[in-house]
Length: 379
Image 1 (cartoon, helix red, strand yellow):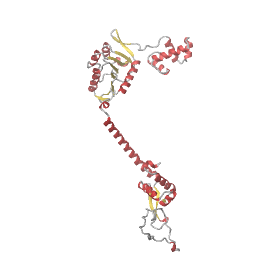
Image 2 (tube, rainbow, N blue to C red):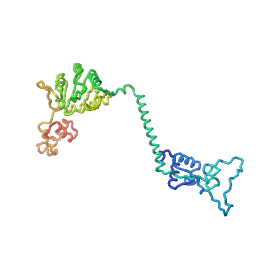
Image 3 (spheres, rainbow, N blue to C red):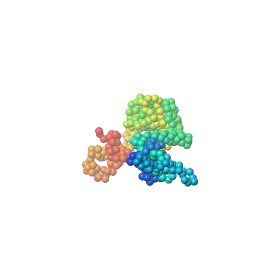
Image 4 (cartoon, rainbow, N blue to C red):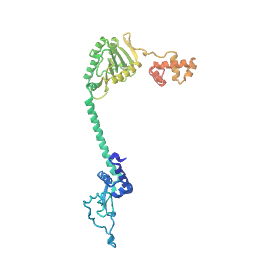
């Protein structure tokens, strides 16, 4: 489990042993773990380097001299008798064979190892690892950004563009209208804080080229200054205009391939900004938004020279369908509605389905909300 802080399996077992059983010599650790001495010393060196253990000389590991039995005093260093040199002693072992650890052999006191408190020593290691990981994350993010910059072609870089300032936004709106070939879709809030309606004449020229306009305006914008004049001009150019209670955002889409949407609102501090989008997926998403708003809106036309809001484009329930809707919203079941109106159950369910399609509702909860929103029932 401590491999995450750089400990080997053996080092972790030795540290756990010292924490659990207290200080011990290398020989004791070797015998308890059944591990060769050289591996023990490598692991102990690793633990010491990371501040997890400390070592001190311990005379208790050597046999004491009994004054009454001088003959049991430890012998002095052995004199080599073989033809070759004596093998070097392993650190802290007192042995000259290099094949084992003998803590009771004559020589300097053996080293006794003790574990540093885990709460202090391990937390320090973990803090270091966390810092290293954070630096690695920052480096990875920088490399990823450098990779994107090196591998992205110009076409990908131009998929979106941030446009800042009224003049720049107005220029982009004019470019979009002059470049449109088939259709231009627009959601209009009526707040001409950046671009007044057809201020450049580009809209008129586009209509003359055969570009079809579909525009949705917010109902509250009908009473805004200059709105009547703009609507007169739009309807006079045979543009299709609809009215909805609330427009979610300003939006212009040209030929299903280019869109302009604001990044700021009129109340925001600083200059207005907009996003020019050429990415097909994003333009398609914005087109879906427009079509949903268009489907909910009511058409606007001219009557006696004045703009008049007409009926919902898909019609609305009348007669028996309105009575069915009223009974449903009052809490009646399908069977109860059928009994009260003298209709068959399947007939009632078929007509309910038709009303749901009319309201673009997937559930009856949505149907109730749409019915109130469209004024199909009394509040």
